Length: 114
Length: 109
Image 1 (cartoon, chains in turn cyan, yellow):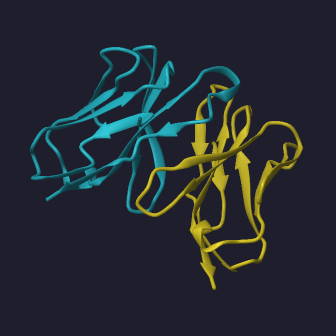
Image 2 (cartoon, rainbow over the protein chains, first blue to last red):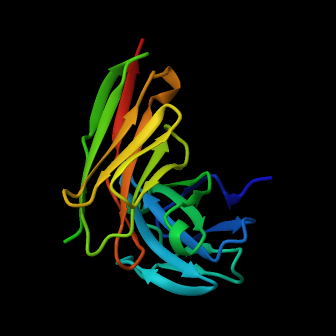
C-alpha cells in the first residue's frame, strides 16, 4: 500500500532518446514535486504542482516537461536525453499549510544515460 | 542568497552521541526540517522545528535558534542502522524548502 509510487525504478537509455517517469500518490495531498539528486547527493527541486497547477519551475532545461493529469499524478517527460541527465529522480508529495515541509518521497527512479 | 551549510561527513561510535549542525540563510523562515536518507533509498522526514528550543523524539532530538540561523540534530545511543545521510532543509517565505547537501554519518562498532 505504497504512499508515493514512481515507475520505473531503473532506466538505462541512450543519449538523444525520450523517456518518461510516472508518479502517483494515494495520500490525498494537493502538492507534488519532482526532485533531482545527482552523484554529489544534492537534492534539487525541479517542479512543484499544487492541485494540477504548476507553482515552481526552477531553472530546468525545457527538455523536461511535467504533466499532472490530476492531483494524484505527476509525470515527468524528458526529451533528447543528455549524459548530464543521469541522476536519481524523486517524486514527492506534501500536505498544505504548516505541514507543507513534511515531504513523502517515492523510491526514486535511477536514470542512466549512455 | 539562500544557503544551507552542514558538514559533509561525520564518524561516530555505536552507542555514543553525535550532533550534526546546520546553519541556514533564507528569505523569510517557515521552519527547519531534518530528513534521513539511507544509501540507495528515498529521504524520510525526521523532525520539524519552527520555534526556538529542543524537540525530542525518542533517540533523536532537534534544536533550533532562529536568531542565530542554526539548528542541530542530536542522535543518542547510536545504532549501526543510523548510518545514513542527514539532510537539513529550511523553508523560506514562499514555503519552498531549501536543502543542504547532507551529512553522511558513519557509525563504527
